Image 1 (cartoon, each protein chain N blue to C red):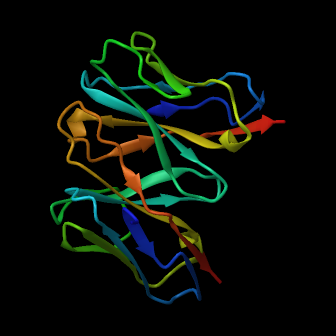
Image 2: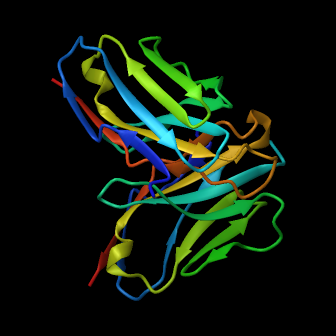
Length: 116
Length: 116
């Protein structure tokens, strides 16, 4: 049973197109995230959602629009794709942070987005 | 300023030997958690070990241990008895209470090569 699953695994598309990446977790976690990993492997948070509510938007262009229909799903829609959007996008989930405690993030396998 | 610093872009270790991957962090929050993740060449992110800022003892998980020096703000990962399968990218990460734990900051990573 995959804990955090995201689809598709690979996405190749033309500049200017609109695309979506879906993410689902079956861990019962309250918090979900989107990360972008660039070609140098640097992993940067984009969005955090808690119980379907947006908590963190890390100055991501508004071409990126996350949507959380319920706390088990967090989808990412990207409009007007640009060359610089080429990266691996990771979805993750975790229990809500309780101050100090062992609540690691569980990651999906990533979606490799390539813009032609 | 970098919140998580991993100064070793690449490390080599002989199979069966121990290796230490460095991580220093910067925070004024007294309550935070430190995590290490492994990313093999297949791309998935695997949680390895956690250390809470109030934990008195260094965390250990099998062959992984965390050398936590709070005053120095360092949280180095020690892998004992290295195996070929340990070859991967390793990321140090931090969650702070003052962001509600909703924002995890990752270091730039260290690529570990295990030699036979």
